[in-house]
Image (tube, rainbow, N blue to C red; front, side, top):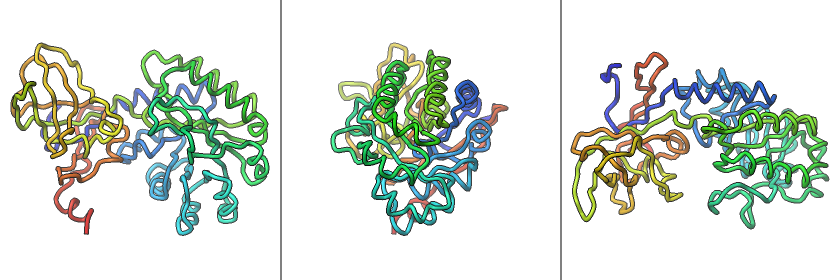
Length: 370
């Protein structure tokens, strides 16, 4: 494999062979369960690999007008439009791109039902339970604005919709927990579920992870579908692209201040924001060796730290590091903090060659402001 076509670091590198491994699992889930799979664009929207993904997924789901438009124009298939709140000037355009529009509240449903009379309409339900252990990401947190809770109120508008979206799994790799929560949903909303044609169970289910009981998962989805007579949808985001993407960085400087430090040409606040938000460490493999080194970003933020890792040899200026699992909630959140160079986007094709699909420069930085 030649490196001549690689862009200058930092850059995101999407490996199509690793992406295809996730797609094969999604194919298996679709086959065994009868569920349809929609890519969650809020997690991953790098459309240069949609040519591969659309062969294994049924379409996209969105969280905004821009996402629903991207889903229609770049991915195709079924296009589900959801927003926590649609604005008056957005809803007609969203409807023009969508096959289904999902409203977050009864008030939004009643307000815009006429605008959406020509397409399928749905409503988000909030079951009051979730797998999240982090309040910031918990859709069932106290006073949550995400979906309707009261089944009796929903029954009053059931004739205006044909389906529901329920999103209460967050990085959930525990099938037993998924099963337990789904039983609670059946008990709480069973009467509603028998009155509709489709139910989306959202994303956050880590069914492409190692040792996940895929057959049990598929059987559970199929039994849910048959019990209520509904088409089940899944909205995999991270599950679609897990382990497929790295952030490639280069060491710019090293120093010792009570601990060995290495500064790289990237930034967690600018390029892997979720590490900062959720106070997580980046992933580097194999993370073994006698040299413990803190890998730091180059922004002025004091806490701009990828994490502390072990290396076989001391890092030196010019060394290359690959940050793993850099696909989900990264490229969609990247920003121009400190004016740090925006990572390019490159793809490792199935034949091993690397293709640069986008580079960013000063004009992109300048045009993002005014």
